Amino acid sequence: MKAPLKVLIVDDSVVARGVIAKILRSNPEISVAGFCQDGTEVVEAIERLSPDVITLDVEMPLLKGTSILKHVLSKHPIPVIMVSSMTRDGAQITLDCLALGALDFVLKPGVQPHTRTLADYAQELLTKVFEAGRAFRSKTIRQNLSDSLARISAAQARNTRAPIAASVLTPRSQAIVAIGASTGGPSAVTRILETLPAHSPPIVIAIHLPIPFTTLYANRLSRSVKAIKVKLAEHGEILRAGTAYIAPGDCHFQVHRKESSNVYVKLEKPAPSDLYRPSIDKLFSSVAQAYGDAALACVLTGMGSDGATGTGDIYKSGGYVLSQDELSCAIYGMPKVVFENGHSHQQVSLQDFPQEIIHTLNQRFPS
Image (cartoon, rainbow, N blue to C red):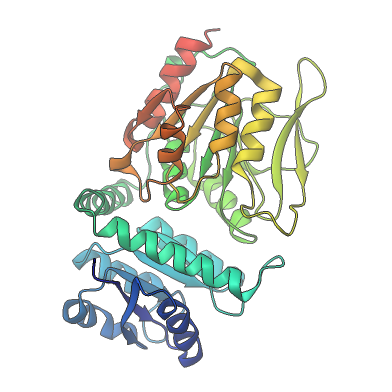
């Protein structure tokens, strides 16, 4: 029997520490290795306790969550799950932490978006901690985390990524690129969009982030992505080339063809029972219906199976599916399911994704 995954809880609130610890201890495969109520204690605690996962409050006294995260990851490439508030400042710091190398985030105990119950919250926390810890115990994934941190540092030193030359892309106008991502997705999507050229076809994106995170994330991308326009999708707008549309966190994002030449955004409120918000499956299935064999789907890092049904629809309609390979995934969950279902035409490393998107568009959708 494998030893339980060890979790270090970093939070200045005794109530939050207690709730998180109680939830984690409900799973016999997870143990609480210790607590830190001050960011200055974290590195010493890591060296003493050797945790597999850290949960880190984004707003700590003395040291901000971003400062603690930088300090931790510079010495120990351990998966960190941020514990975030729903405030604008809390969401902004959380996105900063994801960009710096945090694996994922959960909301603070008691913050209940949508109609989520405490049981749903507990399941989310347990799942994310368990998947992060299991990935960390894999030597392959541990090396990938180290490599990712090195790439993040190099990118920050360069400050920006140069887009691929526009002249290398000549897709036909009716093509579309659909992207789905979850755990590790914000950084992965950013990396791809910052490199795609200006006259890319419309890009539609469903990433598992709640409101207000999706709004802030879209705003952040609109500043960092130079060649293409990035915006939050709006109901009823027409999809345009050279534009990336981010699904709002409180809506399912679909596309709908009303006329032969125009495709429109369709947003709808999710049902209380919907597990994924926004749903990658719903987006991909609508893309298959609206575009048929002119659709290119990209399934990026993330836990779970969202996107499996939608990629099946795109595959059957004659579209093309790229899935992220295990070595470059933060969590090899969604891409793995798509690959094992036989609906991935090609597995691609994250660093090669932009070039492979362009290559696929040029090969399948020449002007």
